[in-house]
Length: 207
Image (tube, rainbow, N blue to C red; front, side, top):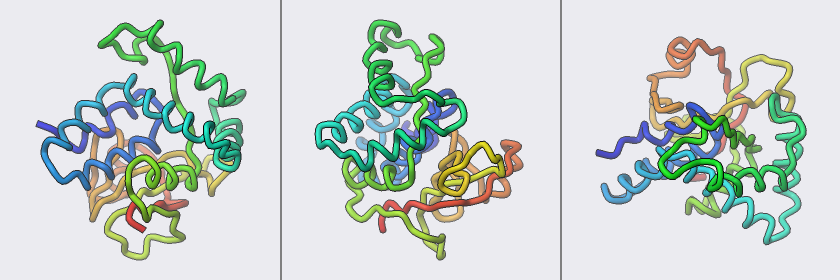
């Protein structure tokens, strides 16, 4: 049976929290069990997530969307662990996956990382353009919204942009979803995962 927790499976080994958060939102809004099953199947394969990321980046490149591509480049180049990031190098790495990862294998098994840091405006664009959330947008505060993708910071000065953004978590009602797990509050999630996350930015899938 499909399970919403499958949406965060790949994020356990790959730094793709923005795309994982979008998958959580897609699953929550999927109208049928068949749609949920398709998402659940796809979300458990890191190679398919990598292909999805590449597709989105190639759309931006085809449109010559220098604003969003520049945001990704700048954020990733300054993001801890991603120094030296270039868009061409990243896409080349994804293109090499079929040669380096056997069918059915995991990129993590081959020590291949497709970690990518998404600025909030880019995540909102991805939700609108690819996921079908026509009204997705950044919002300034929670304001009691039932559903949000919450960007969090952990007080680490190495994370310098977007209020220290280091991770995205999907929240629906009172439940917080990340890494294939869930918690009844951010405080509980911090206890469960030994984190010190504090919200720093918000993206609403539904406006």
